Amino acid sequence: MTDTTHLDRRTLLAGAALVGGSLIVPAAVRAANSDIAPVLAAIDKQLPENIARIQDWIRHPGIAAENWRMDEACDYTMGLLRDAGFEMVRKMPTDGQPGIFATLDAGAKRTVGIYFMYDVKQVNPAEWSTPPFEAALVDKPGFGKVIVGRGAINQKGPEAAFLAALHAFRAAGKKLPVNLVLVAEGEEEIASPHFHQIVRAPDVMAALKKCDGIIIPTAWQSANGAVQINLGAKGPLEFQLIASGEKWGRGPKGDIHSSYHASVDSPVWHLVQALGTLVGPDGHTPAIDGWFDNVRPLTAREKQLIAQTAAANSEAEAKKALGVKMWINDEPWQASLERLAGQPTVNIQGLVGGYTGEGGKTVLPGRAEAKLECRLVPNQTKQEAETKLRAHLAKRGFGDIEVRVSGGYDPTETAESSRVIRAQQAVYTRLGVPQTLNPRLAGSWPGSVFTQPPVSLPAGQFGLGHGNGAHAPNEYFVVESSNPKVAGLAGCTAGFVYFLHEMASIG
Image (cartoon, rainbow, N blue to C red; front, side, top):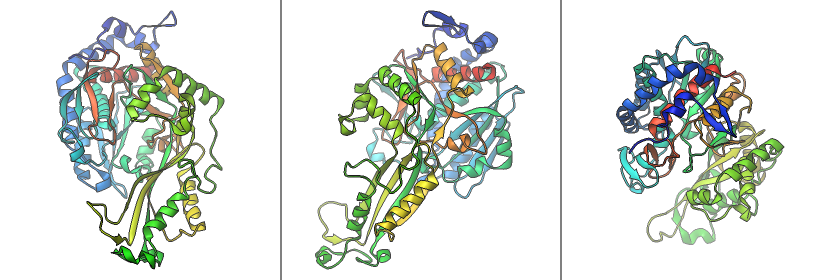
């Protein structure tokens, strides 16, 4: 199979696209055609080794949630950065897992920031069709040849594609059009509790201050080739609620026979009752005291962008991808997208108490635990959310329930007029990729560490290509695309070449 997304050399090398009947030739391509052609040729030549690089990275996992192989994963990632041409690569200690600070000085006038994560989510191998860290190459109907493995799309595939672009520049004998400052963490999958310690180190801060913006490499094309450019992301608050008879002072210290529930309180029911106060009777609207006090409603412009997104994307495809038949309250497509961008959430990830094996065990458990996360929108903050959560529980008689916050950060917002957003629009337009502006990603990434003071940088995501299954079994990333509308690894890599050139020249 071949990657059909970037094979039209006449269009890509000329940098021209027909938009509304007008021929658009961006400044970046006019200035850099002679530089881009040999880089694209190098990408094609290096495709086998670029595929192998992703596979090998997946085979070197680190799971922060389990404190599993993290130092090894960090060291491996540092080696990848050195191999790609970063001159300075430094491990950054934190109060948790280590991060990475790296720079590449190309002698350019402008500097671009890059954010990486090297940790991955937990796995249950029994749920996978191939071992999750084997990085098997599999033919996937409708997409082509894919790598299946934990971290394939989130985020090692796209990040490796960015590194492949740097390898291609060097193989072609071409200097990068921008300097690079890269920061990486190993705790993204536990809501980045210590990432600010890396970013606010004086030398890292000084380097980031020179950047025109920062991106996390992605590969988010839909099956029809369309992409969304996100102007922000919700912020998470990850926490556990733990009810125990010992701390409550009621109920058993450990499991006892279930017959005693006639005279002994249940910590499990205590937790369930506490959970029931966090949302309203509809089961989804947050009911924590004061939760909506600072929530900024969607602006008229944001609603306009959502309407455009609804018109440009298939509701049926979205439902199929999620495995759902209807949205909350049976809302229409556009209303559901407005809720997705504008409403904060309180979600139960998991709920465990007592015996969960085969058959019954007739016990009254002495302990129960729930894992939750909240998604926050402007102008909420992580600290505000945590404070209100604790006060809400205490006010209702649940102050004994232990609240363990494991991570979180504020929502992210980036101006539509920033270079990092306009550069994405220019590249997608040039390559004929359908695009929409999205006010806010419903998921989270620690972009607020960059967008808020003292760093104050525009931040976003960029990338061609496709993958799916983040946090789920059989996660995959397309490396050789059979879909002419979707980029494979070579097309994804070429997109980063164009993006760096655009960032170098855009006004």
